Image 1 (cartoon, rainbow, N blue to C red):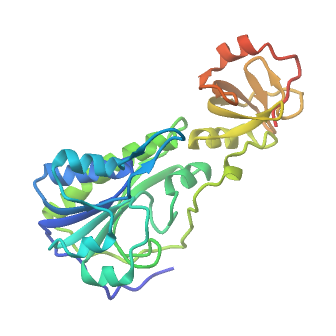
Image 2: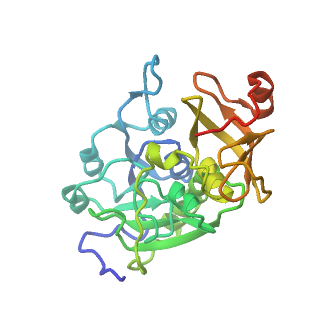
Length: 301
């Protein structure tokens, strides 16, 4: 599938005054890189402060905290991207769609953590890992109103290793993407190219996506664990598997059966490394097993 180039304005080849929109930790390296490279950042638009734990207070987003340290003006209104006198806006993991009206007023660049058009959407790193992709990456594209459809200035590939977690991949993509973003806006953006190929969509992972089905192969369950938040049940209560190691070893017990520190799957076993029983902090699996004194034949799920 090939797209036509958009009718929206494109950024100048070498913008100097920029606006920035981003919210989570993934967006911080790009903001820091732009500031350290000497770009004039007219405004930082980010998500509003929110409560991050049940008993905690409202706290600013990671991007907001970084902007405060840098002495940059902060806003929670997307419309302020257009009123800062910027040559363009840089958007990284902002978390909200930007309207066509705003896009028509100021050109916008988007740093996206996938190899577009594969994995458009909210959870590209997690979906790439869960699907068993060998490679992921980061793209710089011109932002359009529709979801991640804009033409692409460049793609940078990052291999997915057998032990990579989604959290580690996001850190690497954010750091390498930030470096290449600054190189592009400093040396010249060039002309973006329409996306090529059949798109796939990275919807946000649900609780059901993270539930372990022990009849699946150990390799699939391992990917769920590396995505983060993989869970099962033990004695009717939720049990999170924070770390594990797959193996092709076989066992004749039914899937979900615990023997030693390993759980039987539909093909192979998963050795438990870090676990989190209901109402407890994460713990080394060996230490938990020693204290839990589970009967022989205990089954998860």
